[in-house]
Length: 130
Ligand SMILES: C[S@@+](CC[C@H](N)C(=O)[O-])C[C@H]1O[C@@H](n2cnc3c(N)ncnc32)[C@H](O)[C@@H]1O
Image 1 (cartoon, rainbow, N blue to C red):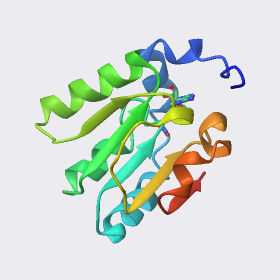
Image 2: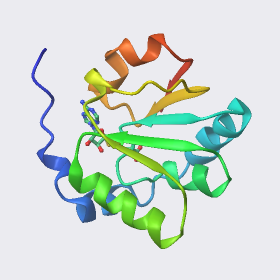
Image 3: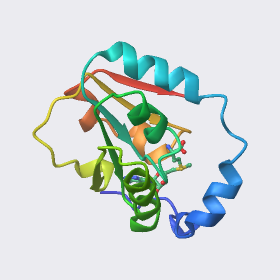
Image 4: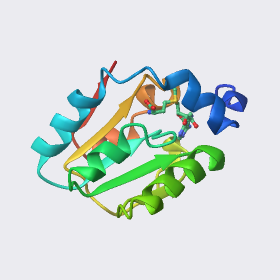
């Protein structure tokens, strides 16, 4: 397996959130797709839950997967604060271990590893954008 891109930039969830605070234009798009999927949704490389949480708030069953504990910790805390029932998976998207099938699998903000690695895309419809 090829080495991962440099992930050190994702060690600091505060920094990430500041960098992405103004990025909101894509949320309605993914939210609409998730609602329309009418089934469980998997977000690959979910980060701190920028898109995961709005989807969960809409009542969609969603799983957020990310390789970085720092990003997932922030996402998990936010979901708990709002009592949102999100499943979190700390995994490398190149080696997803889940028996579940999803109505929609997507990855936002062009995580290069995640959008070019295909095993997860073969078992479910896939969407990548932005
Ligand atoms: C640019 S951020 C995007 C986060 C989120 N999709 C968003 O739009 O707010 C990229 C994310 O990809 C995650 N990531 C990078 N390589 C990964 C891999 N191999 N498996 C799972 N997650 C990965 C990083 O930890 C980081 O949270």
